[in-house]
Amino acid sequence: METSPMLQPMVALILWTMLIWLWMYITRIPAMNKAKIDTANLVGGTGGNLDDLLPPEVQWKAHNYNHLLTEPTLFYAICVVLILSGQDYGLNLTIAWVYVGLRVLHSLVQVTINRVIIRFSLFALSSLCIIALAIHAALAVFG
Amino acid sequence: MDIAILAPASVLVLWSLIMLFWMAGARLPAAKKLGIDIAAKPGGRGPDFDAQVPENVAWKSHNYTHLMEQPTLFYATVMILAIAGGGHGLNLYLAWGYVILRILHSVWQATINLVNFRFLLFLASTICLLIMAINALWITLF
Image (cartoon, rainbow over all chains, first blue to last red; front, side):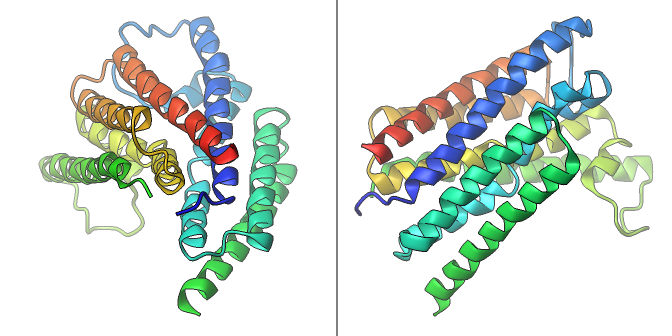
């Protein structure tokens, strides 16, 4: 199989997620030290427990990292479907890049100012991209 | 298509399902012991239950949830490498490394769960994924 152009937006969003992962730790680890959390003897718990202990803007990075591992899983699956069904060019390719662009903006809003109305608008727009791609994928595999 | 790299991905899918059974196997006896009637009221979810049971029971479910997070990027990266013909050599070793480290991370989180070592296992597995993702970018761009 020839390499597909649709692999590029997939990779871009994966690397963006890893960047947010890095951003999460760069802010979280100093904040944990500042909050005097005894990490050497800490047992159990999950990242979510830190919501009660750390400043909200520190946890916003973690919230966005988690967010990037929810709906984008559908994006990756749909991209693979579009590649395997030969629909990985033109409009679908553009929509895939728009999805990635909107998710990057969504991340930047959530980890910095985190105004919910802006975050919601970006998320709603990006979800419309998923819906469009999913309908095209359905037409390709059932049509 | 480079199908060799689909093997570690398949192993991680199966491992995630083993964790699902491990979680259920810990939860159901704990519910019985505590007299929680899981059929009594509608709408409950895992985290509601985790708050009521001993923490080492909840750890199994924490890890199952964890396996549904970053590994979704791993599967996408594996697909990209397989389709683009990059699923061999270093990428294949990294994929196996990722899966083995995630299995160790699961066993650790489900049993001893000292956070500093759990963090190191997660960090090491993430570095495997990061290198795979950079290689995926390389192979799809050029």
